Image 1 (tube, helix red, strand yellow):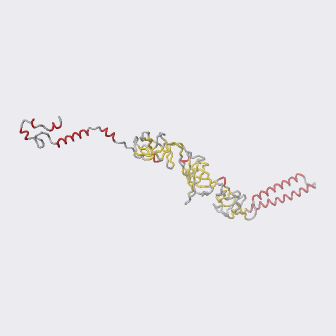
Image 2 (cartoon, rainbow, N blue to C red):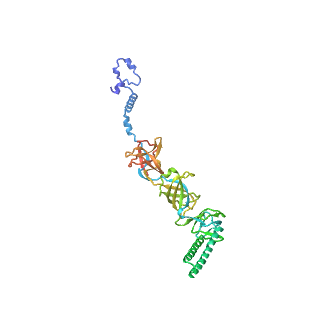
Image 3 (tube, helix red, strand yellow):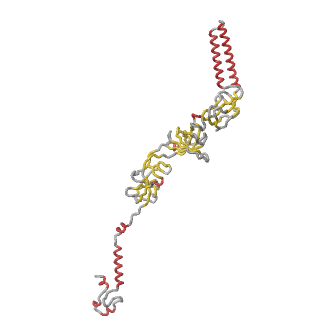
Length: 392
């Protein structure tokens, strides 16, 4: 039935006139129709009913998909090393160190230098006085030589006069030769009465002084150590480093070493060197392993005795190299996100193997063709939509 017929009834259809009188206000007696406001209300109700049955799926399809803006870097593999930090001291190279001693018994009279002092060739180092017994032995050797020379001359004269045999002449000749050799040996020792000054055999630096003034020196006992060359061109220094036992396994002979002095207010550039020996035992005092390195000290502040800090670069291994910001951690361990061709984020579990500067060396089942999310990954979920922006 039409809305008009439903809400309005003609008056002529009413059999009882009293019913007409009881028609409510708002009904036109001449047309018997309901007023327009009632029709408007009905139309509004029908419209709301139609709107309520519209498919919710259709409305969802009209809503744009939300994508998280992220920055990515290419997934790449490479050789990466984790530096080993060590501390140590610069010592003189063993090949350039000379130990000075006195070959005869003596007393140290006076030091002419101090520890750490640079000296030139021929400069006085210390004064000694030979032991009287040593001086006496040298004098006896000279006198024995004189006696042997006179004895040989006398025996030769007797032999010429047929008053001495050939064996006597040979014995006199041998005695002279023995006396001559003994005298030469004493002269090589440099023995003479009074004070004797020992001079520097080359340009160098005084590293160690093993005796004090007035000490009795035994023949051949070390008096001092002198390092050849000082800071002159071509000098090399040994670097004695202390390394944690857990880090020693990654070190090998030939690994690069970058050294900086710990001296205050030093702006010297780092010095490069390499490892020459890796210790195989733990020092009982430091509980660390000694690693020896060699480096050039020409034109540097690394004088013998300098305390330094060194970064050792072991031989690298192959890993995935990613920025530190790309690796996250939760209760399940370390992970990162990669972006597939459909711009969906995929979580990948990884293991951090190497830490160096702003990068990690990691292992894990990464897809080489998918970029790695480096920024914007904190709020991501596995399978979430992203809007990648490559890092330039």
